[in-house]
Length: 228
Figure (cartoon, rainbow, N blue to C red):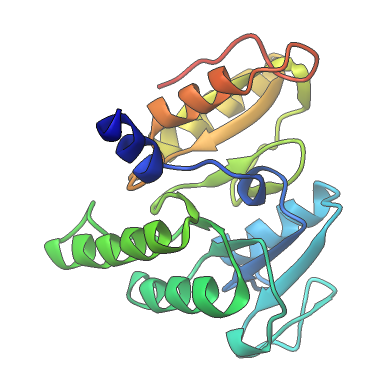
């Protein structure tokens, strides 16, 4: 019994701040929609996100019509942070955002972690340790993002039509996910959500499947979940 309780305490958590955030900050959001930082902002805006969207960019005053913060210290309390900055900066951002800004969910687009070098793996472990300390959900790093009917926090195109009648698609590979989306959209197939797990340092494919199973709502959720 004690052993089972420990498993639940330290199990990866998919929380409301990740699935339906009241506020999102894009760290590294920009006006260049041909780069991930700009493309993420474009997709969140075009997806008609209903919460508060915030941007941190030290060089821009205005990012795609949104007043930008030059320093993360200027942010108000925020639910979800999407990081699109160099890997070496990510651990310090995660630590500060968790401890000072109440962030409890992260989507880390950035690459250059354990998939590349031992040093990158150490950075990745620092991020995980901080997320576990504060009970924050972590998608990535090294992923294309998370797309659902509440927010389009991905940097790629196309954005499929989202509907509960569509499928929930979970992928470890971002490139393969984009290939499948392109093929599916051209055929008129629908999706309910798209999860790009990337390195899966905290939340992996099996964790997303478990959460979907435990919280399944026949009125709102998809009955089909392809994974790859």
